[in-house]
Length: 285
Image (cartoon, rainbow, N blue to C red):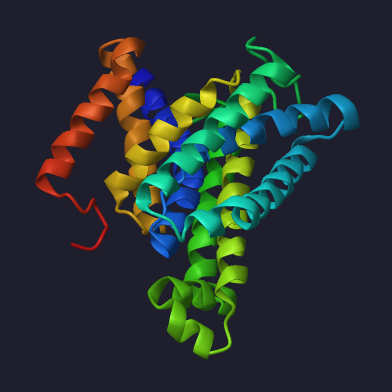
């Protein structure tokens, strides 16, 4: 029964990994652009949640929406003020731009919030429920279920809506999309907003259940790259399955070998899989 509880906990955590990784894979699939600041977007979503609770007295719905909205706006601003200019430059400029942005956001958070770990005050989601003998903390359960639903919703938006068709059209052929009346800059700004918004709400969901500090963005960034590469760059369903797999492997590794070994096992299996299947689980060869 304890092992089953560990498995469920790993899958719930993996669902949140999938949500913020889906934003990273959206940017790669649309623009072939790597955002090294994506982990910091998750971290900022956590702090936005804290500010909403502390100064506005908002509950989970309020700080979830607040984190998603604030990071959506930040994503659009980052694209309009930085990304659309470095896209015209060499790959090195693209890499260094978001790496520098990650450092700027991280150390600004250190300056404002300090290096101390913080956590949200108790919310209406606190407590534990017993499901068939499995004890599940309500915050982790709610966060995991919402993350899965939002990741599926993002995939459906990309594949079943007009906006999704326009986003995919720009990713396939920017020039042809312009001839069809689609404005690539507007679509790419929207993609950055959606990517950052997904990271923000994932951060809010993580904040419900786990303490954090400004340095957590680096860990989330590495996890997102593992999930995206494992699932296949550009594939939201791949990010969903890979996120669940990574969360499960981390939980089982911590249970069997100890918490300090969980990342070692994940990265070792990740390298082994990419050696056998470089395009990831659901990526195109």
